[in-house]
Image (cartoon, rainbow, N blue to C red; front, side, top):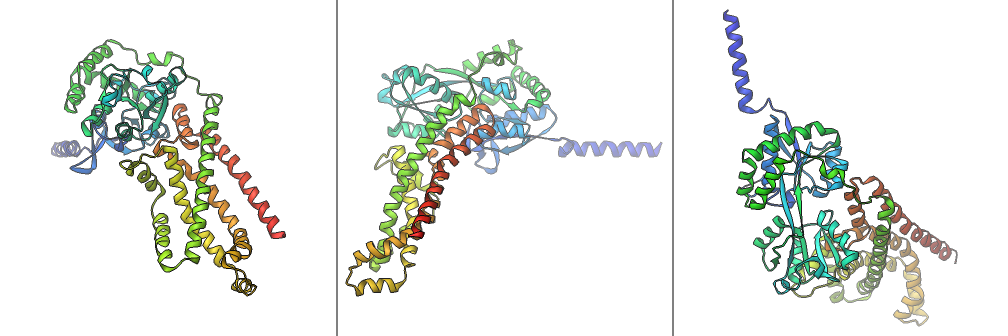
Length: 489
């Protein structure tokens, strides 16, 4: 009897200890993007190692309903769907929109929040741009890979508006205020947050459309999705979700109406029954080819600028005085020592208070100025590689320095510089993918949009690689032929 009592006491104490520490609860890994910011998911200012937001609290409700502990996994917003299928986490929640193609590829929870797509315009245009139909031939910004972006693409042939895709939800509104775009179409939560943060624009009261936020799980986890749905419905009934949304100031009467409809409707797959848009290669190939043309033209113009400036920089550092060489050397080291992405941001956004460069022009200047520093070092090394005896021979024959450069030094230096110049152009062709951060839709950006819509990078990635190879391989062959011809001369 004594031993039995002792064993019972030990068991009870152990169970109590596990309950206090939570060690008995397995983790529920969920993914979100803290870069998206409040009220979805953001780093807690009091403790940046933690996150907060209404999606964070909802994930906590789900985890506790499953008797598990929530564990946050940081992931880029555009990669949430791919990561959940890879098994990086069990559920993705970070303002994920309920879409037809999403339900076709993943296990999707019931919507837990209803948002409105609203149009933001400058105050002076509030009476002129009330709806999308009023924006013919005007630039309308939004986030790439969202329902709003697909809506703009669908309306483009009918209305004639110009969709502008961004990688974040901050710069669309700053560009609206500065006059780079004429309107922004995004969720009312994002629009209200940006209005409180910076102001300077007006939100049209009539919504363009409504949408819903959902949790996304791997298709194989449909049983877990069903359990999550039970928890979400229970939290709708007992007011827990309403309390969270009120705490984050996103609750209104329309949300209450949505909850009532959601609880009355037991269907969780009604969207999946509708036909979805064509996601085949044939549908996206024309857009990829147009983006490839943008990439090629951008790269060629940038390389021409880089070569012209590089020659000037190299000549100045070889032939110039110390006063000339010093600032040129500083420029080269400054450009090579800072990321090209930072330089693009400075050109496009940093200088906007003084000069508003068009996105394509800023991209050409950014890449051209960056690669000019690298080209100048190639040309300088090639010029200095020419034997001094040849230069002295030219001077002995009475040639001027300009004639020596044109007839003796320049041609030989060009032959030496050709191969690294070709390598730089191929590198520039690939680095052109960075200009998507300033709204230029080039090949890689269009591929990312394609991959987001079809839910896989396999086919889009192969197509993108094939197009890049088709552009770069002929250039490499041309360079080899020139090298062979000149070496035989």
